[in-house]
Length: 474
Image (cartoon, rainbow, N blue to C red; front, side, top):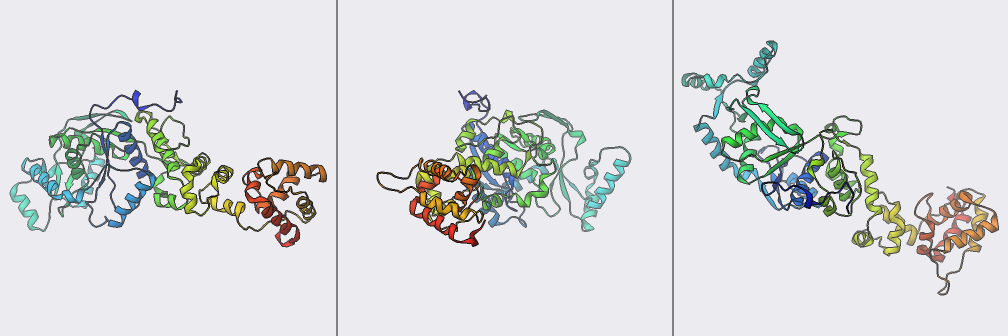
């Protein structure tokens, strides 16, 4: 029986439509934790329902989109294990978008407007001063052909707005619940700029329709956009997708996360040595009612995923929580999973080594340091001058290592027990000088597990060097 926080996919109500979701980043920069959370939730939702996950690059901003960011986004998703089923680029669909623009113009749903940004701002200020909502007054609709010709003769070029139907727009949000907006209280949105380039709304809706997107899962900063997109989708004869708007994350103090995104890119997390599974385990549960815990695989996250567990409260992203979860992922990692990475790190000391050190790792790369402690050459340390004599005694009492008396998990206890009886030392006074001399560190894995790995010759050499070298004082 799974824990209460894990709900198998079999008990989830199945969506009415086959699930097809998209993650649609603009390749204008690196992915940050907010982007990754959106990608991850979409991926988990698709996998939980046997659906498909589309990676769509919304690259219509030709000036800012860069091929290197496309490659970086792909690399980040691969690092996280979020394989996509299909890939698309909005820029490759420009002809289709132009076709829709022409159709909307012909139908009178797109109309030309000639106000400058300063003129629009002046209108908004006047409306606010009169206690009216600062929405566009549809002056462009009232222009005659002669007036439009006169404005264009002045050198003005139109931007084009979608004429909204002044009706109530409703949808059942999978996170926020029932939502509605009165379109009469919304400005007719600009879909085409003066230079002919398209804003985000039209290509996104057209592509969602043509690509059969069933669910759009994204941040709550897009909620108002959703009302417009639902109406545009219907104008174009499409079926609006089901929407889910996730609450935006804050920092640990409840402040806006956006101010710190430069230090929270996926590339930065990878460079810091964090485990992709720790990143996914944290982001998959932030904002839900589920416990955040280490998992052994993405499949475990899929098994416990339920979009209905997400609430409307803003979740807090704390890097300290990620570090703690990262350590727990490493502590539970089986040797067979770690082995290829240990080999690449030149730190594969076998299953006994991994079992000995994994409980003390904060980053996987730390294993190389403990590999040197167990099998390499380190600088032993002397805790205090008076410990030198104790270490010489410890060296004399060091058990022999023979085929008939191998060093094993009991050697440490037998050796330190004999030292306690011979010297009267106990507790920290007994164990710390030995740890410092044998490992060069004041803390670390259990010495009972490390001592058999390093062997008698290496242990004896370190005790001798620490006792004889005053410069090794800790």
